Length: 395
Ligand code: F3S
Image (cartoon, rainbow, N blue to C red; front, side):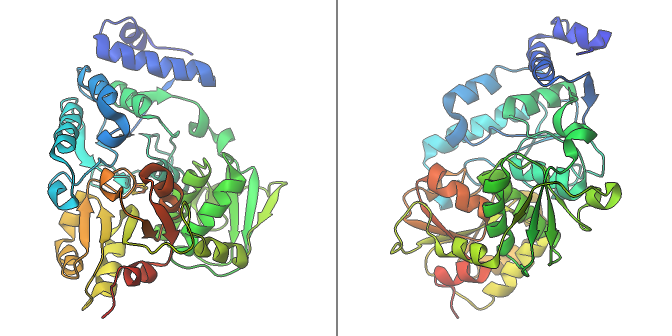
């Protein structure tokens, strides 16, 4: 891979050990994937934040680094709401370690906003054709597919390296040739709400790590697209998808029909709603969690409307980013009047606080795919209304 003189100096350690390590990671990835050079990135989003997933080894690795990031950089969700972790039942020992992780990232100049929806935040909006180094899989999918920006599905260390160097290796989804669809998916039935998560859960299994183009009868909203991409990235490894006449690249580039077509029928989507993943059919859901990926302002508004004059008897989590919650404080207040908890900086998958429940009702295909394995809690998908009703949100 071609390196400029300045990049070579960094690789040789002349800019310090941290930048040398970062450059070594970028060059190693570039060499493995055949990149021709490094390219500048507009922002970075860094995974490896929840103490539940990185443990002491991860904390030690981050704490050993010195220096400052060169581009706006933000974090993935942490293992707890950084302000109201006690309300979540988080143990003080865990909280202490989680605070240390965030402080270690902050000392590198990274903004301590922990979210999988950086595109809602000031300073992190991306536009068509921008090169990014994002790592959370749903954010990657949204950036590539819905915005038409370009990012690989970075690991925590490679996103952090890109943030420190301000560049990433030019391979994978940064290149036109890897953005062309290789399989099509046809859905002739009408879809709404959580159907997109259920569809993504199914489609991801068939598509794997390929780039699909969808032919759809319905017109999804940006939140529907967010849910579809998140689910496909979890049940499969889809980092980029197109929808004919909807997503920007499909409109601007105009792709040819791939040779292979997958048809998904309404009956298959309905079957996803029937199943309890990771548990018996007679399990009763004792918690519901929505906001995977983190809620937009529109989603908070919809949840507030559905919870009006209702009272939650069990547990209902609504996950979002702190910035979106703060900008929509009135909606948060309305939601919490029902007894639901609006939790920021974290989510139902990366927090240890959901462990110990029997079964979680979710409206997200991604949460359906991850909760059983990562939280050891059975999961069932339903519409937003069903999630609310399941935890006693009647009138
Ligand atoms: Fe975000 Fe957690 Fe879902 S990181 S996409 S809310 S699993």
